[in-house]
Each structure stands twice: as structure tokens, then as C-alpha cells.
Figure 1 (cartoon, rainbow, N blue to C red):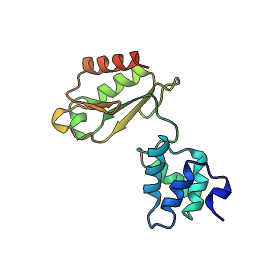
Figure 2 (cartoon, rainbow, N blue to C red):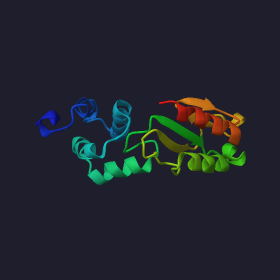
Figure 3 (cartoon, rainbow, N blue to C red):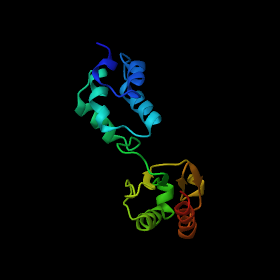
Length: 159
């Protein structure tokens, strides 16, 4: 029986067909799903597990293990703060605390209005410009509390 006949969500069906039967297909499939819809919907886990002949627990475990994968849509603005060694040595923890306070959510959280997602990453590749962050895909180095506050204020003014 073809996957589409089993009630698989429309956007998922072609992704499953493209990865079915390929060794090690889970990670590439999860990346493709997240690229297509912005996150991995929990309701899709059973279809993914069935298509790849895995248990739901295996699929869910991989999604939860890798911080890159989201199970909810990201906010309209993504604030990603570097937690790499260089950034930590140059004050990243204080910047993280500042962003958490300003946005009212912990690292890894989303604001209730869906406007912001606050995320941590272990390297943005800007070690020579530590501490660093990425806001809506644009990287910013040599952050100070004042520069971070200005970036967040500007983003809060945008839709």
C-alpha cells in the first residue's frame, strides 16, 4: 500500500517517498521535513517511523537529541546566541541571561505571542569576534549588553 493511502499529510508524502529504503535515511529526512515546514510536527512522527521501519520512540529520540530539530514552529524572529568556548569566555552567559529577561523566555523557548524564539548554539564560527549571536539569519559579533539590547529592540519593533 502506498504511503499516500494511509492518511500521510500531503507535504510529508513526497519527502517520505524520496527517503524510503535509503540506509541512514532518518536524519536526512528530518532535515528535509524541517526545511519544508520549519519544524518536525509531532503528528508526523508515526508516519516517519512507519516509512523507515523504525519505532516512534527511535524517531522521537533523534528529534529530542539534536537541538537543531524543532517540534513547534519557530517564532517570527529567531535569536540564536553562541555558547561556544570563546563566546562563554567573553561573557555569553550574561548576554543569554539578558536576552532571557528581555524576551521573557528561557533559552530554548518561544514567546507566547510567537514573535521570538531564543536558541543557543555551540558555535557560530565567529570565535575571533566573540561573543556572537545571530538574529533572523544575520550574524553579529563583538556583542556588548548595549548592542544586544539595541538588536532586540529593533527586532521587537518589526512585525
